[in-house]
Length: 458
Image 1 (cartoon, helix red, strand yellow):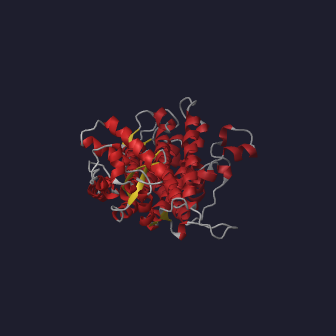
Image 2 (tube, rainbow, N blue to C red):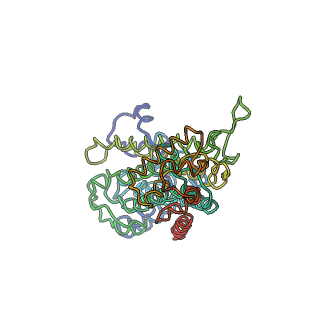
Image 3 (cartoon, rainbow, N blue to C red):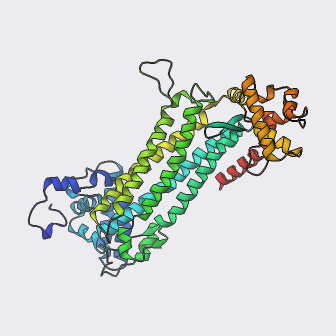
């Protein structure tokens, strides 16, 4: 068969042009969505009397047979047929004859491809939300086991104040919670129906777009046909949300790389999520979190790529828009793979509580509490801050930490110090007194975990 659009042309398409402009190598991922959209479209055509009911039924049965073939991987798509839409339509015509050509009545590939991508992203976004919840569940389970586990909290990658390890982990829970909210909210824009917009101006046939929207489960119909075929905001929004998700995955991965290093030794990743060296037998490399961190760049690139494609396009459809799909597919697959690995890797990691505790004992992260101690005894904060700075300098010069200093040494800096300073400086006390809402005290962390579990149960 010749090309389905070939009536106006007198020459065959140049082979190089055919290969360069074809999208079937990647948009075949939309086969099921394309058939789903076509089934609803042809049902509407029959109901509206635009084509005979018997033709609509014949087309429906042909599409269902093709769907079975696609599901069984029995279809070989052809580059000569350009894209998934023309491939399926050609298969349909080969299967049921010329009546298959009636399927395209009242629509264009422009509104058809947009509909396919809305359907695809709606499904994938819903699946990704579930995968994020699996990561959140893993974080909560680790947190529940480590409410009393203390770890140095950092600012500027310098030890700042001790915190509950559960509190540290739960910070990522809330990052992923916002990610879920962004994806959930984006579904409002994904759930707009473009089908029925035609090439750009609508159609002369008396179609029922509301019926198609109902059949496909769309909540809104594009009210402007030119916007319907050229809008890719819903993909941009997904790519932006995905980029933020990968940012959070990358940040947590960076911590896992640091914590599992010889220098930190705060956690040990399960052997099943690490690899070895081809030359150094002692090595246990955190390749999974390193790759999660590394793959973040490609997701960012997909967002910037589509932004760049769209920035100079006049209305309505342009062939440039063919570049919207590969980045979207790649981002979906990258996110799926990343989240599927992150959940079990988090769940199975071993927390080295003793090493964390030793780190807290050998630093000055409890210094702020001395300042608060003096302020409570009436000293202005700025004076207290200066005194503590001098105490820390003295301890460093003496090769000691704050709990190692004698009461006499403290009194050399201020007569306000008494024996209770040692209770104030204990790591457990430092953590326990930060009992404001959202703080790191065990009491607050337990409440935070309860709140998180309630979120997951909704």
